Image (cartoon, rainbow, N blue to C red; front, side, top):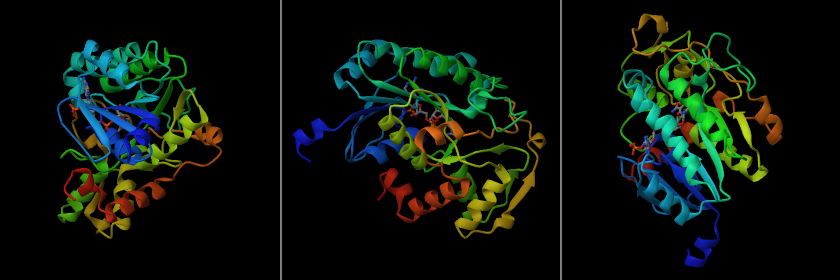
Length: 311
Ligand SMILES: NC(=O)c1ccc[n+]([C@@H]2O[C@H](COP(=O)([O-])OP(=O)(O)OC[C@H]3O[C@@H](n4cnc5c(N)ncnc54)[C@H](OP(=O)(O)O)[C@@H]3O)[C@@H](O)[C@H]2O)c1
């Protein structure tokens, strides 16, 4: 690629590029966009993506980095996402999720950048399920509370798009997303427990990336639920993964989340209604089955090893 061609591509800045979603978006966009990714502790790199170490809480260097790059789009993925760690270290969670978002928004002052903020289904208490964007939020743990506050910070900037989602995918780091956790254990022929009373609407990270690109091309702004078009329990999700990956689905035990004593409370039904985004885009969102198939197809293409720089 010539330097001139590279310079005419739209510029996309991704925070949390060393995380699950950030890395997957960087990989997906790397050919069509000029991508700069920011990480904090875990250096990552791929051909076609520029990455920089940048703590979002360091406002002066962050501002310089953002103003030097002048992104057309800034996708804010960085967060402290470990629900139990957020419960144990409340101040750290507030810094990573709320204060860092405030600083990202501040840095964009004076720039025409479109901000896309990634939020979560965990802003809801899970009592009702099938939540729409107009349902009142009621987080049951500190992670959900900080993510809700962070949405509010992002939406102060005109034109911001907030995506509430729940994702699975292939990690760049050694840690495992839910999908990987299930598969790795089943591949080792271990038994696993799947919660039959925890319901969600998972979306494969790459599917989310494709939808996100459509939303900014359409100029959408405001709050949207971007998730699978249907819902399933975590137990069903594990069984469906087993089927698509040709593994033994009887390795999955059905249990209740109440059987485990976890530091942070877990909401039970976090299924999201996606009709607002479906109508705005004019086409339906991927079903859970479709997302799992797409996750499998990328596995067959060697994506997990490529993301980790092993192939
Ligand atoms: N994964 C899910 O199922 C899920 C569900 C719903 C919503 N979400 C949301 O989606 C977004 C991405 O989630 P994810 O699973 O990809 O997260 P992740 O894998 O845990 O990655 C988090 C990222 O945030 C970065 N980070 C944290 N604090 C930072 C700071 N102070 N300065 C700079 N970078 C910082 C980390 O950098 P280092 O690792 O380099 O320190 C890492 O790149 C989050 O906003 C999350 O709330 C995720």
